[in-house]
Image (cartoon, rainbow, N blue to C red; front, side, top):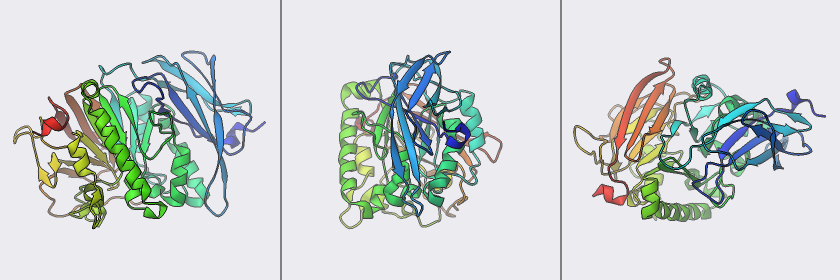
Length: 423
């Protein structure tokens, strides 16, 4: 029998939707062991751990010199009751993890989901993590969104840095759905550590950590890879496939019944279209690749696509700062009014939240930012968001440097959603 202390569990959960995209009844538990085990099991229940779900495992071989082998276990918990708290542990007769708990999503669209949002969280200098751990276990959030860049880097030291990072985030990711998108620091060996360690799921039931979507309350959230545009050594086809998927996804979300049920469309991708940092990143250029597409041919740019289908809010990271933009399209500000800029704006709103803390520290701001930049701050911290209802969304930035003080906030009010809202 394996000794539990040597087995090194790393637990992650995420909502898994297969047949019914509106269902809160499923959860995936994902964990890692250093050795193969007889089975992959989760024992769970509302009070006693009387229910059992079995899954499977795969062997993941890291691309580093030692070719370390990790065993990735995934188990689906099904037929869960909405809005209920379950206790669980995972493992097998070879050894069990500690006991954790999670609360399933409420049913339907008439509730107000609460999010913690951040990117660029490293194994070293993860300053925001203790505060996030505390708030997650106090029940402050329904979901965590990690907008790219993990560990710095998960493949480092033959993926042992990845192991360390997953243990660090376990007190967060074992308690709430931990939804992710890929960043540039995951690119090694064709993003293999990211692809294997996480479990994001398409509505078809297929694992796809690069691009997927999920529904929560009155919102439809779309996650995608900005990295396809930069690491073309892994193939150009992935840019085309993702773009086609994004357009199909946005068309479906804009069908009248779907947009009426979930009026908010929110995207999350790692590298932003716009930024006010002074570090030479792509977003500092007037014609950034994510915004305008592949240079020369100007194809597969995302700003026009997201504008065409009425995306309300775009979440980014990559820059190690927090920045809130005015509603912007094609570098022009489209505020709702001078007094109420975020009430019925005529363009999407962009938020950059990449200041959770990592070994690369902060990025500097330019001296004279463009007119579309509304607020900038370099403190370590993270973003909170509450989708209040179909018309109101509240967002605030927490400074860990200032002991949890809220240093910025915004209420986005949309009485009309979709492309018609821009008129």
